[in-house]
Image 1 (cartoon, rainbow, N blue to C red):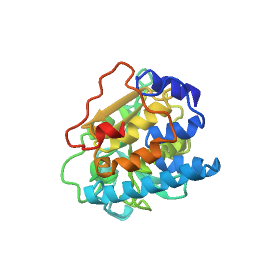
Image 2 (cartoon, rainbow, N blue to C red):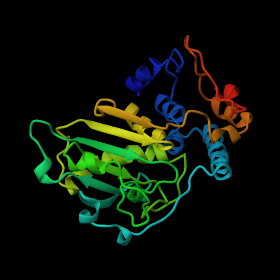
Image 3 (tube, rainbow, N blue to C red):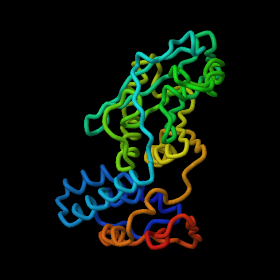
Length: 284
């Protein structure tokens, strides 16, 4: 916790002194609300637990109103095989911390393309709010465009894991901003077993890269911050750069949650708030 706090402190946003219940505070500040709620129960902080539960309820309502996720299910029976995809294709599930199974698709280079002097990268990709992993990988029969990753994998440059959210593809559960960060970290922690399942060495000989597109940048950035000692690269594609959909949460709810922690500090940096957020300034 102290190491992560110091790392984030260098970004100029955290208070000058680390608060009590640091691990809990960090989870709230980083948006991993489900894990924060679990830690809050473990610490038996009753008032904080109530504030956090109310906030998460409002967040769920804001997600629904903003259409934050466009989940769509699909069966693994709908996937095309390796021959159609042009690369070696496999798929599987990992288990989130609350037991929900979440799906993914793996692209592997052909053995003939692998080079010992230039080991391939391993890319973990979290998609947008309307993207199934299989569709982006272009092994979903409903995919409407070729996967841009095919050539990269076929040339032996990278392995790619396309990771779904809850409720997408063959994953269980319902997607939520309260869960996606924690689920992303659960996948990263499962990566040694997942790699072994698909014949990959772990730790990989090449660089390990996390990538997020749109709402998936929340997941990618979360993993990159938590696991900076193991992540070699971070790619943010079309990142969400405003408070959507949390602009729909009333300022009083932020105040109730924030009173349990010291306020964030600008630390000499100018904070710019997106015009779409009516409560952005107050929420900071």
